[in-house]
Length: 580
Image 1 (cartoon, rainbow, N blue to C red):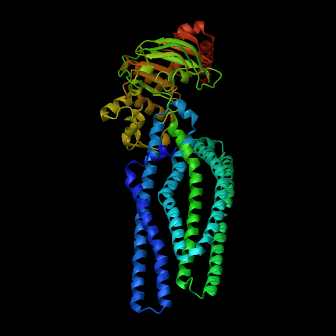
Image 2 (cartoon, helix red, strand yellow; image 1 turned 180 degrees about the vertical axis):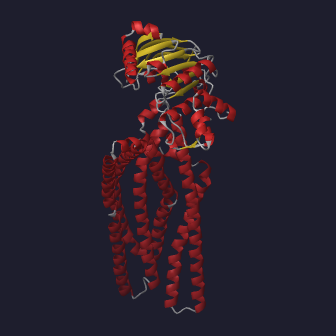
Image 3 (cartoon, rainbow, N blue to C red; image 1 turned 90 degrees about the horizontal axis):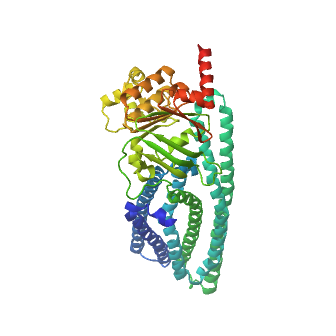
């Protein structure tokens, strides 16, 4: 796990190595200062000259500034290295997610991935900075201060032999108690983020149903749950302070007691006043080092839970990968389903699609209808290989989709999904997702085909109109037409509309289909719709029912042979008559 994480240091190796080097310089300077101070005090007691005092004073100032310089350099390199490490790690996870198939994303909730990219990486970043800085400083200070204390204080240094292990055991117990609690709280973070995400995305629904109070209560409950968990953890970690104070003052009392006893029994020959002062300083340094180690332990404990969650994403293997020597060109838009069965998970008991056999000629217009849950979307997702079939094969242009390069296949298949998504940016920027090189004239022509030019021209900034995140400042029908135009700009061999005209009126729907027939006759068009009128002019219509093909034929044929199609047509026709 650590190896996978530290691979992200990359171009920041120099700063990562320099930070411990600078910390060594700082620690050495800090450990020398008490010796100089003790020598100065002893010299003053012995009645030294003013020149000696000035000499030792200047030496102390020099060591202090040197220590400060090393500390400042260490802080700068540590900040650069940790921020760079986090940047690389965040990019690596984001790029990894881009390679995920839909089935991979299904295994991680969106809110969980957001938490891993933000909170978890921040925790690991802080732990990394502590490892290269504080985790180097604390052990070195502990070792150097103990050695110097044994040299200066002789037998008095044995006090640390008893105090330090007792403190270390206490801090270890605190850390081990906190570890499982940190692991549990991050799962609750996922739930909290999920609640926020749902609320923001569904804000219009929340307000239309006047459910703001309910959402506030739900968020407050999740937030309170996290607060309670962190409170319990902080109560445990707060014991660090009292334990540290107990060890510190115990050391000072024991050092003072035994020093006084030695001074009295030896007549002041065993230990001088300056030496006593340095011993107290070294005791503080030893105990503070242990305190730092406890903080490091707690931080690493918290970061360990985050690191495991990050590595879960890094270890995830994309379910859809292309072959080493894939086919790079899609011949045409013909589609063949051969004995296809599909389920979303190996653990799923029921197939979403069963025994699908279907042939679609290049350039044909095919309609797909069926009730909710009939797996219409599942069927078309197999064509662009958003999912892989469980059994059988899907061929496009006479070649199995698994033999194509993923980019080449998806460039040849434009899908306007049921959930239309626009991104923050101008209308032009959104449309150029279909073709980054499209000129303004081409964009305007395609928008006329998609029946989008009229409303775009009505905006003050026209094609430079800024689209808010998710397309919040355009209507559902406008969003659908912009998504259709974006798909058309790809000049695909196969165009799939997954209920993508549901928010436009029947006249606009008819104009869009007319433009398809006249402008892209060679493109295979698959239209999933709830309205019979949207598909009745198709070359063939597929009726799906519970994941199987219940009917296949033209509008007239299905009216004669298929009960589901006939019933839907009758109901919709009657509803149309009633509206009139």
